[in-house]
Image (cartoon, rainbow, N blue to C red; front, side, top):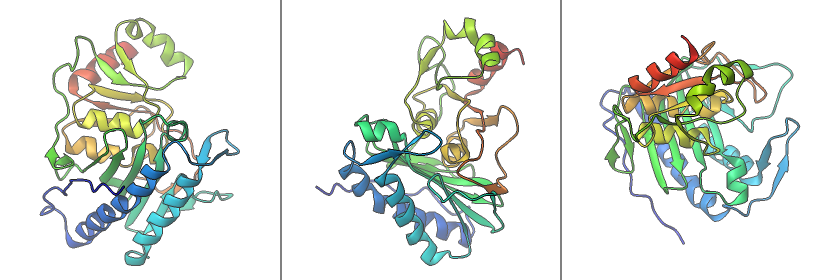
Length: 278
């Protein structure tokens, strides 16, 4: 059954024509994949890639179809997907705009019928994320926005948290984490409330909408946060990489390394930094 999402884009008056055209085209392109995503939830054929991660036929199909739709209007742009063909060397990103896609963020969840999963698409300009879209399957809603705009879930403007959402710091983190950081966080992890949704994009969506205080990720790749980064900034959260920043993104490979980050409220950052001794 076709169920149309009730949604709208934020005020795009701050966007120049080139960015505005891409935001509107991306909005249509992501929505165009939602019904296919829904229909195959929990039923998609999957296999294991060489790096030990799962991929489904839906990952590959959405990657191809969504980029085909955008490529008709913006053939000069760079297109980067977790499911892009791997190459011996990373591909240089020379265009003004690049699209960074995770066609199914939370593939294990999606394949097994666990609803914490979605589509994540980020628009980069000169390598920096400027606007993002996350289709959250579990809430059946579209979240979008950027730092120069507001962030909207469906038709409602969202704000990240400023006070604790629970009695203790509550945030998203996936394991395993590096042993040194795990040792530093040992005492705090006995107190904090940790959520492990199995999807970095959904974790970021929950930060942007004020359902979590923050997100601390050590295993994320650029496609996991290219959409959530600007969406969280548009909702008032601040985003920081723990080590070398992934953006501006100058080159791309599906086998590129992780880019650990923290994003959330000022309170979240202060508690995490204190626990890490920074």
